[in-house]
Image 1 (cartoon, rainbow, N blue to C red):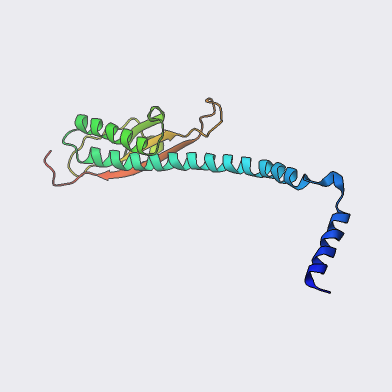
Image 2 (tube, rainbow, N blue to C red):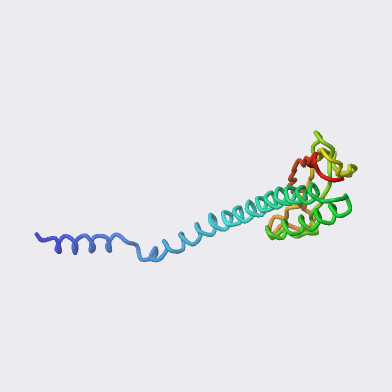
Length: 163
């Protein structure tokens, strides 16, 4: 017996065993499983990437605002520079700038204590810059905004600066 004859017999045997009502059902099953598995997977990836984007934005914004404030000649100019740096850093991560909060904390304190402290920018001063970004997960309603990412950067003003 040749190989071709074995192939013909095998295919005839398979065709005989296949029920006519089940033809094409594999595609339907595949599409159903793909929808059940892949749609939630894509949503999870989009949600995690939105949260990670918020974390990157808050960290970068805190660092850039700290550098802007630490090198400024006075507190008013430093505040303006820090706010501009935060807007740029947050826009770089495609996060809505209306959901950003910039605050300062005294040396050694964490961001929970931020808000009432204002840096004086004296030589050698140390303070923390805290940026909080509200992260919106795609397809969730607006009132679900409890996801926040906070970035902190510790600034030590140069001791040998004029001021």
